Image 1 (cartoon, rainbow, N blue to C red):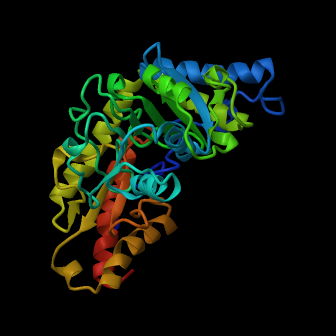
Image 2 (image 1 turned 90 degrees about the vertical axis):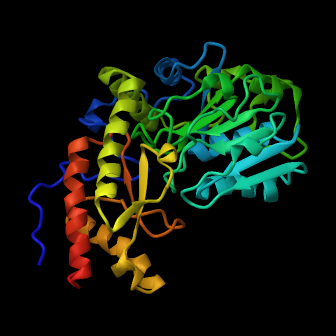
Length: 386
């Protein structure tokens, strides 16, 4: 029997969303004065505006861009961008993992875009983005949450391109620098890199995106949750602390607490550093572990947040497909039962494997302590003890 490791992670939270709360988080640190108040009250609206202003400050969003709070997490924010802006010109949807494929389905089956280019790739790969015409609107996922593949750069987006760039950045923002000059609509959820609560998302619009919204009326009906205009103009109150529907002030206060924590540790640059350091620990371990490989073959395309890995070698190859799929599940389940690590099994639609979240709210020491336990569980499984 393989000897169990001695050290255990102090915070065994390795989920890729909702992710680990920031270190030192506790509910008694939240400002609760807005709870039980109307979200339209001066105090509550001020807190919503503070969340927007702090977001802008920490992310370095250009002064002429707008930042708003949207319902429905990243999905609501991204689909709002698609529903309100696409259809005015040819479009490309580029996807390389499950959530990007949802945007493809939206474009094909729901919006039924007539002049549509679809680019997709298998898990761990990225399509040839140079194929995208610069006059096309493009929807893409900066970082593949379920595949661990990210775009290596934005060179494929020409400066001043005619089409809009709609960027699902939910597993990238606060871990990777955004090239704001090339982005027109950027969305993300509070529950990803920041470790906030789910349900609300952010929508960041460039002046070009605002112009599109104000000059274009799509042919399909818009549900209330996607209506950004009042008359023929953008409803700018949405980007000044008002919201389309009633927000959770508790979730808002949790988001503010996460933002204030980011500011206290040194801002987005420190978040980038923490994610890079955490991911390096996992990537180096994968390289040194003969029965694992990174799901992403090209190092330039490997994420620093949800690092995905699959099993390899003679033992795994000797198993049936069903038995292979059970390996990561059994390892993750056993370590969860022992309170060693939670929620690091791979995504349900991805190739069977493990996925360890490395965003800035996770401590490096906890990752270092998790990895020997995975090795132990793997050897126990091979020996028939799991």
